[in-house]
Amino acid sequence: MADRLSYLDWNANAPVRPEAAAAVAQALATAGNASSVHRAGRALRRIVEAARVDVTSLVGARPEEVVFTAGGTEANALALWAFPDRRVLVSALEHDSVLANAPDAARIPARHDGLVDLSALERLLAVDKRPALVSLLFANNETGAIQPVAEAAKIAHRHGALLHCDAVQGAGRQAIDMRRLGCDLMTVSAHKLGGPVGIGALVIAGGLDIVPLIRGGGQERGRRAGTENVPGIAGFGAAAHAAMADIAAWATVATLRVETEQRLVAIAPDAVIYAATAPRLPNTICISMPGVPAATQVMALDLAGVMVSAGAACSSGKVRRSHVLDAMGVPEHEAECAIRISLGWRTTVAEIDHLVEAWGALYARTRATAA
Image (cartoon, rainbow, N blue to C red; front, top):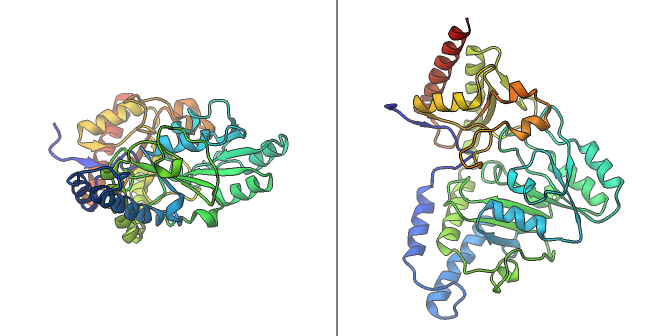
């Protein structure tokens, strides 16, 4: 067993911030239901509404626009099923929680650099004049490529369409203003920025009417039924507040990411970094080690104490070829050798040293075996 551990899978889940853990504990210690009108209920309601304000800071929204959900997956589903009279278009780069909730949607192709093809979006909207909903993520969870959301929103609105943006990977790591971007709906999630798992939100701009996905009560202004998860909401609010307070720290993470890429490519000149020419999140590296399957890399690195993933970490522990890299036109044999390394605000140089040492040792072993 490895004697040291380096966690470099922050895009899957960030460690819980102390502020968030404290907020969850405080809410758990408070009895009641946030929908009750007695004093215990009112105390919980104050916690929920204070957290709602903190969450708005992530995307430049208003409190009444935030609908709390059980996570980013539910928020994406709510957005995609909210307008049954609209046809849906989604980019080929989307997270599985978008693709699975829009199985019949038109797919907007991607370019080789990891960005959505805006000219294709324009064509798809022009050939069919029915009202539409376009879903485009803020930044890809595998490559980190930041998408041209503002430009896509302009195209969508020009054709009378709405634009939904899954900002789960970007919120708290980049300054985001959904109004400047032109987004009508935006998904955010707590556990990517140091909050608890199982709480997220769909932010709905203005007075858009939506069809609720979960019915049975009047919670969240009738847009999402069910007793509020007050501990989760409290933790989300605390994590959002803390994340926005130290968002400048991600500039240091970006520098560390660049240095990491340089060190890995120096070891393996035949390695490929995907979406390298696109604007990217400050923390995300998608890199292939030619000839070495992603599953082999993930397991070998794990045995050495370094934790990374192969593509998205939302596939029940399965390692499979990335649909994102497929959409980018990456050859099959190459895509099967790609892993994702994602850093965070607590990542240290020592952890990067550990990664480089373990990755370099694996690279050397595979080349010696091939020879």
